[in-house]
Image 1: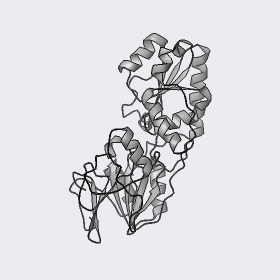
Image 2: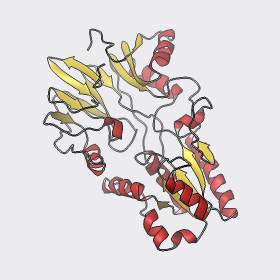
Image 3: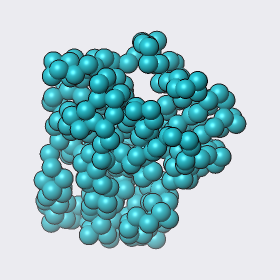
Image 4: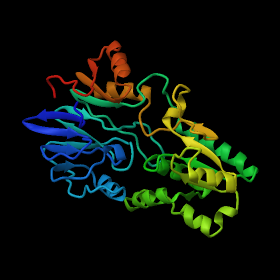
Amino acid sequence: MTSNGVISVQRGMTVHLDPKRATSDGLAFVSHAHIDHLHNQNGGLLLTTRQTSEIAKLRGYNMENFVEEFADFSMVDTGHILGARGLVFDDVFYTGDICTRERGFMKGARIPKCKVLITECTFGIPEFVFPGINETIKKVNEIISEMYSKGKPVILLGYELGKAQILSYLFTHWNPYYHDSIKRVNDVYRKFGVGLKDSVGHTKAEKTGLLDKKPWVMIAPNLGAKNQFIEHMKSKYEAITIGFSGWAQSNRFSFARGHDYSIALSDHCDYNELVELVKKADPEKIYTVHGFVEEFASDLSKMGFDAQPLKENSLDEFF
């Protein structure tokens, strides 16, 4: 692990796994298009998906010169967001961000066997066990129905890439409007065949008076209560906000951000799913990255696995 992400040297080739900055040596693998995984190219060999490249372009990054196949490297769908992949090479499986749980149009990841597993553990402590998706849908529909009976609009808040598209799909029967930023991402998802219903962006909806016809549902980015957009929607339309995040599962970690309701919904594995992931991979060695690395590695060690956290400058003979 270095200041520029995880690096592996295999058969004389340097492999950069989700580097934080562009590299010109070896192979750079970009697992998906969340901002903390993107960078502009500088001429090196880039392995990623077409979906990731398209979304990166939408977000202002140049990642057009890429390959989707290279030598004995295999990308596997990790069920995180559109285009998200893990990487398998030389009996190594690097998960990137991963979710084994089905969520609407998103299918859960299938886990390959490997000798070395490099896994994220964003929610790698036992208190993060998420409710089933049907339970979540039922709860949210009940809240919306109650608010509708009072004539109040509802804004569903989730990360604009990934979570917002799940919300758009799960609650499409409410014919939601979209925040402009989410409408743009939804358009890319539709381009790749995801069945998201088109709708009006918030700017047009407001200018044409559609928001005056309450109640309504809107999908918006996960903005805090003091954000100008949220303050405007609350003061002018008396909108109720529901925030969605895996962090809402625990009272120890601040997530609410002033939301009226907070719902645990994540595009990552929860703790039990991470443990099951490890069992299915059946590795000889496990490295934990991103999240509760020490806690999860310790738990895995107690279960009989050879696991260690991977931190910056924490290297061994594999890397």
